[in-house]
Image (cartoon, rainbow, N blue to C red; front, top):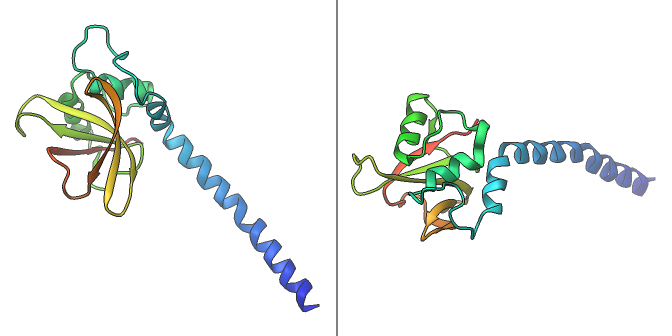
Length: 155
């Protein structure tokens, strides 16, 4: 009898927690739809604009299309400013959020952008367009990200 009770408790526990796990997985995939699109582009070159100009922001806009919560821009720095004006910045980024960098100087109009792929206890992994002409995965040590402006939240 004791063995049957233990068996019932184990089976009941597994089935009780399965729906919660499946639901969490589904929500995660929906939030990171843009990240999934970005990952499919890794290794590709510029197919995000036709004039050959810097295209990191074009890549981010392509990935999120109508789901971008701010006015799109071809300029990474202008896109960052749009996130700031909308109050959609965060110090605690999640996968799928956008990372922004400054170039030349913190006050320059020039910038760079990409998507947060994952965050570990010590590093942040990103997917960025226009890195040596390709969509590339990069890894940065947390607290030591060079030229970081901040992060934009994708809601």
